[in-house]
Image (cartoon, rainbow, N blue to C red; front, side, top):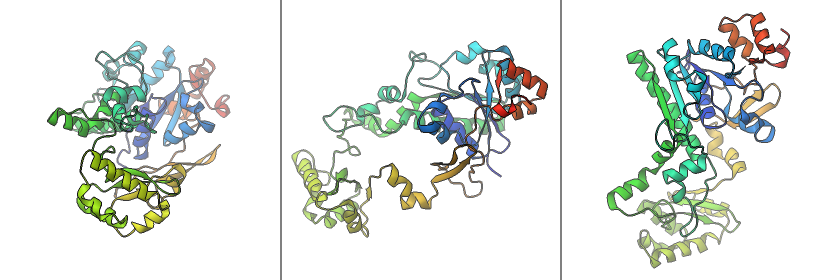
Length: 396
């Protein structure tokens, strides 16, 4: 048994934020029905090498191809929504209302429905109708402005912070909270997720500093962003990089002993020229040996030193392998797919990967059967372009 067994999710999202959120729900037992446009489906199907982006975030889902711009397609969705638990959509505010599929309409048929809307800036406010991407959301939230080296320009992070931390994770939290509330009230509600809001939640420490002192946080010049030698990234003699997180004095003292510079211990939180000299000294020392040599030297010392892995090293890292964080999923066309496994570990009701990423319209017939549609009507809907069936289903 899994925590979300018996929960049905209608997934109207595309691309990344909503797809990851609904995949997480599917990993823990929810039945996720992915509603896709009959023509090309989710645009992620055409992104990356051989749909790599789509495959990465759409396991444990069923695909139903339905044209919601046609009345017959909307009727299908309304019928599915009447018995569903959760709807997740990622359209701009107002799109679902124009389709006649907004929360107020859906709750008339199903008062228990939980309606999660993921947008860039939320359902209200002066930016509600603005288009945007991750770079814009983290820019507004202040995250982008703090990312980069001191004195340099803001640097774009290598991962999507607002999309994933602000969109996917916040959505799952909101949906689970709404499910818990429904257990007590019997009624659903709207979960209004703004990716900008979620990115702002990453600003706890910088804003706490600003609120308390009035000092503006500086890019590359905060305790956790490169101001001190004890918490920094260092290049090694073989061109690799190591992360040193020796914030506590005992860790810094241990690190200084390993590198043979106990005289730097009192300079841990010195400022100005003395700190600059400390950073420069540690940088020059780390360049004297390879990454492997330094990791061996630090092996039995508590100093918070770890490698900065590239993608290939990540998947082969012994801790990643031990935790089972890279999964292999068998796909009927693509063969074995490797992807990130569920990262939430529950001891009694763990996640499971049971369905590979679906082919477009793979489950249309099955889902519509369950909603009471006959084969004859399904075939007619397919001929009319209202639904998409897999090729082998077209003549059934």
